[in-house]
Length: 178
Ligand SMILES: [Cu+2]
Image 1 (cartoon, rainbow, N blue to C red):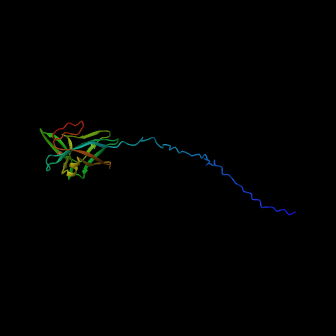
Image 2: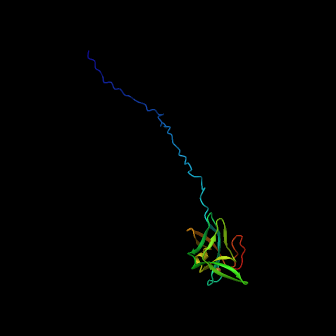
Image 3: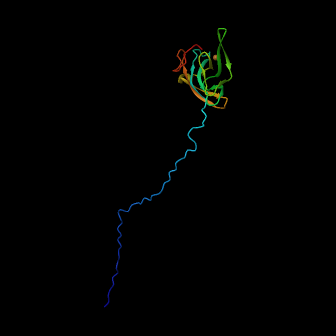
């Protein structure tokens, strides 16, 4: 008896496991904790800086204006060697002094800034003499000065421009005649 062997088709119907999911491999992520090599800011010398800068604008364009500020000494003594600005024709450091009842002033080339000390350029004493403050600065109400220190630092400081007759900006300085 011939037996026909029918082809047996085996269908392997694999059901996809619907719960197939990504297996999270627990990888050890090493969080590198940045170990501080040095304790923050210890040993950074305090720099010399300048603040409270302002300009008393001259009422007359032909006469110079005056500039004032306070220099604060850092950990090391230095000197102020000069002051520059792009917003005026010329800047000089001056010192006023009374001589036989007359107030005179003379140009000074450098000013010592003692370590941790304070040097004020203030009405009646040391001041900046500023010729030809430019109109752009006047309308903006401020101008930038560059202070040159003996240690090579250049400090950029904005000074508020006070129109003639206005009093000094909020500071301890009392308005006084230049
Ligand atoms: Cu002067």
